[in-house]
Amino acid sequence: MSSSYAPTIGLEIHAELKTQTKMFCNSKNDPDETNPNINVCPVCMGFPGTLPVVNKEAVKQVLRVGAALGGTLADYTEFDRKNYFYPDLPKGYQISQYQFPLVSKGSLRDISITRVHLEEDTARSQHGGDGWSLVDFNRSGIPLMELVTDPVIHDAHVASQFAQELQLLLRYLGAGDANMEKGQMRVEANISVSKTKDFGTKVEVKNLNSFKSVEKAIEYEIKRQTEALERGEAIVQETRGWDEMKEITYSQRIKEDSHDYRYFPDPDIPKFRLSRVDEFSSKHIKNSLPELPWIKRERLIRNGLDVANAEILVADHAYASLYDEKIEPIKDAKEKKIATNILLTSIRGMNAGDSELARIGDSLAVAARMRASGEINSSAAFTVIQKVLETGKPFKRIADDMGLLQMSDSGSVDQIAFEIVKENEAVVNEIKAGKEEAMKYLLGQGMKKTKGAVNPPQLEASLKRIIFP
Image 1 (tube, rainbow, N blue to C red):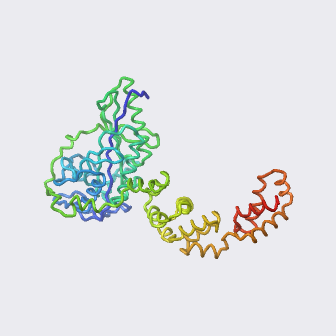
Image 2: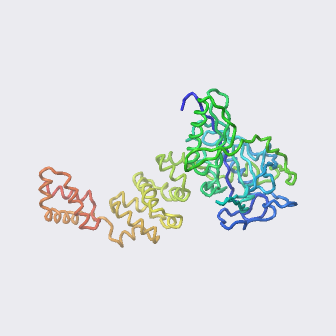
Image 3: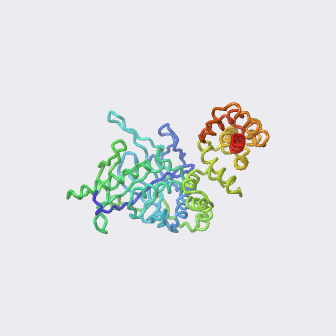
């Protein structure tokens, strides 16, 4: 691919919002419902004569997203009809926002945002192998947030990172689960390439349902457009799909412009002055925000965590909460590092869920202190942690009951060392002859003899005193 062509990328990201009911009716909003056409009513099925009523919680959630992004929250807003025909859109139009979105401007990961608005989701078409299609209206009318970036992205990986950070934000705010595998968050990428500062012809790649697909589809489309231009071909403004198996984009339809949708204000929904609703005020919305992902990330790194561990905690609210509550207050740097390692390797490696994490409590600090002081070795500590997660009993009590506290008094350790030397004369002679690595075998015998209870450094020191008096 020629480096003389520069790509320009803009993203449109749709995310279903986590509300009790749908956007314009009281049908249940349940993304996990598997039986078709259960959560439906005349409003979300588009029956003639029905009237929509705006979901207040959905409006609030979008305003909170806008505040987190540093955007401008609207005072005046209205809903519009976006007219187009598709089998999963029974009214023949989608209720969306056009000229007066809830949020304008803002940024995320240094990428500027054009707008964030609110609309309703469509139904879901299901196609059979022998030519038939059915429509499930459970998803029809679910509150859908759409975020549109400025066309300022120039790299596929940056685009994927932006989408991942937005997913984190939605989860932190409780606005949505944004599970891409379930279709709760869908990414569309607008891509063009050009040799000049002017934009090239824009191609939209629709419904990318994983961060990996976002990156690969953009990379493929940049390559496809560049090679076409180098052959002297014109790029067609169109909508394309992404084939995950073949890892290629394919043409779906000619891309529409905004005027093709014939937007006009929905006559059934009143206009809104949000400043007249106290809980929609900018001050109230901003005060409702939790610690945001990027602020948490900066705090964790500033307090000594490396970037990789900070990312793990930022991405997992339960682990981050446990870290903040039980590990962050630890004063001793060595103990704090050990506790962090236990949490992010041992406990996370066991795929501990919320219920198990609730049992760990103060045992993290105790385990770290006992490891730092040499009262228990790493292998035994892992065994005890497993029991703590299973039973919720205190760490030290389990270690005592299981006989896993390390033998550290000099008399007992010396006695074990004498026995090992006596039982392994050949190995001792190898060590005396200069084969230092043979010492590991003696240490292993000591661990075996004491079932892991002996302190390895102390045992090694004792062995050396006996072997080299």
